[in-house]
Length: 307
Image (cartoon, rainbow, N blue to C red; front, side):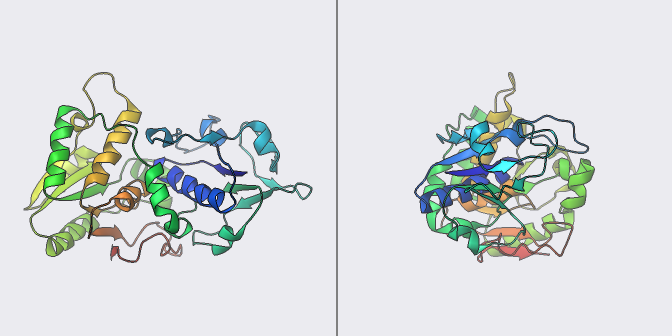
């Protein structure tokens, strides 16, 4: 059995699923997802609560039970169900608890056998590059279900040199913890990346996706065609559905032919999943505020870095 602890937003959960999928295939065993950290709502200072988001895809996952998890770990403090604790390896258990200790790719992980519990972010395609077809199949959207305006946008995206421009602000600006760790990439990066893209492809149409679309409208300027994707493109005006907006956003992003991504795994996955031949992907050199963190294993070699 392989159990993966899910944490963070959609992009993080996708990386965690992908390494679990790879190890389950290598070991010819079942993959189970541990949702207990996501479900826990214990108050934590400056903590951004997340939900299980892999259900926007046509997956049929198994979920780890309390007993499954207990077989791998012991706990401190409040107990295993709340998951406000530090995991401890139990030397008397045959199962292996694996805690990620570096952001970089660790090839030794793929040599592990037996029953495993994975706790980390595992943000490198090197963990699953050789099962790319399976991962892309797993991450098929249940349904696009776009409103009329979204369908028109999809047609435009497919017919033109569309460039997904993702601007992540939100918690990277307003949450003190996340702004210290990640931070907003800044307008200079956005403008430089757009200029670089226009030097590579002809007649681009920039499709701007953001959690702060009003900021984008006020600040992003270009002589080229540009569309700012408001909520009207993503779902009907009544009966707001967060999951539907999430799914439609990612689907439209992935449908673009080229990409300018933020320091965000959400747009990283949209670019990686794109099947467009000869896609151009531009990413920021500053992925974290801490420049000592080596992110080279996160980026495919053909992607273009902008300072």
